[in-house]
Length: 357
Ligand code: UDP
Image (tube, rainbow, N blue to C red; front, side):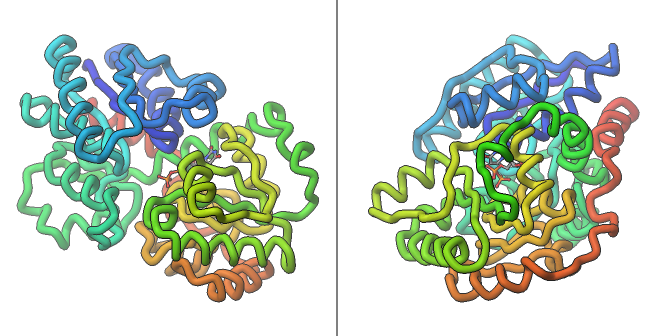
């Protein structure tokens, strides 16, 4: 079975690390990785391929820093050319980026089967580009691999019992990656000695809905600064998009900012922090995997089970809410023993489904 995997952004590299390791165990599977180039700098891309030992992309389309339409359009064109040449049995995409929808659309129109990993997630906010990408990719996928029960429920509510596709609740490939790489991170990372705090909260901030609005961004910056100055030191690996917007709006973070880190460093930060504050999708789950409460700086989350189990609270971009939630979640004793994302067998279940359907 020849599979083309299309990836382009940081969280997709981490997911692909787990599934590519599983593919490599099967001689009947040939995987060809296409990197669209959405994330291209060393610390947002290369570091993951190197330290996680992800197979090197055979193709790199080098498409980045364009508007949504231009980026998606050029990706479709580039992927179509590769599909014509490689004639794969299946195209596989992850998550909700422009690379995801571009890959799915190019393949579907050529009658090549499409598998979507992280299917069924919804934020119910159609203003988020990620939501549009998710919904459209699900609708044209042949295999919908859902990480959670609520993802399956979302698809059922949208009438997927009447749509020809194979839906499997596999658990989350990010759980597989976290469990595998957590065994190696301590030996590979020295990030803790670099930051120099015994106790700290880990923060990330990069979503367009926060960075593209001066009002939201300045309120969150104020809230994070106050937490750092009065409650607990905050360590924040700064995404290049956020860095550019802060400079543009003349906003200053007084928290401890560091460059974006690789996955081993990230795992060490997660293991050793006292709280996570983020607008990232992936990090909300990783907080849970590593037994940390999370404050989410968004109005909705796709990971509703974290909210239902009281290990995550949504604060939008309100600095007061952020402060109150950070104080509460820093000391709250939560139960992280519940099984929300599977037991690290998602990749195996995906491969089994692909080989047996
Ligand atoms: N991540 C990382 N280094 C960083 C920031 C994030 O390795 O400096 C990882 C993080 O642990 C998670 C993934 O990147 O696995 C999430 O990426 P991001 O927040 O960019 O995307 P999202 O999950 O919101 O789509």
